[in-house]
Image (cartoon, rainbow, N blue to C red; front, side, top):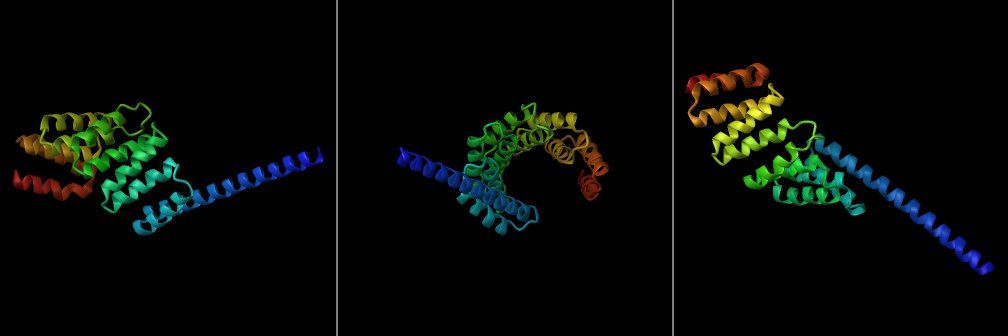
Length: 211
């Protein structure tokens, strides 16, 4: 009987020790992950990748970590690697809209426009996604690159209905109108772009010169 009690006590201590080890490992993984994020935000993508990969060795089943890895690979012009990590993030958390939008961006970088459009349509239809004008604009860009200018125009306009002063949508719409031969509409879109974002005043001047 006494031997059984000793055995149970030993097992209990082992479980406590294992739980402590897992907690400590989780803390270290999150610390490395957050350090990688800070390097990413600072533009030091190589250091960011170093710490994120170390974090992945500790816990690869972290959807936030997998999304950060995808972002770093995108920043390092490796969209094919980024796709794998965004997909892994979504396997871990299927409703992770941020990773889904990033997956669409990676497809754009790979010039896989149909795949990008399918992903962005899912994101733009997510009622909990805070900035649907971003995926709508990305859909417009994908259609623009496919030379389907009517669809591009439609999605840029949908984005601007939600956020009338969104520079990326205004610029995309202006380029689309130019490709369609609608010079007056192109000038109007770029004029508004210059008004909402003075950085683009030079582009508006250029548009006036070439049209």
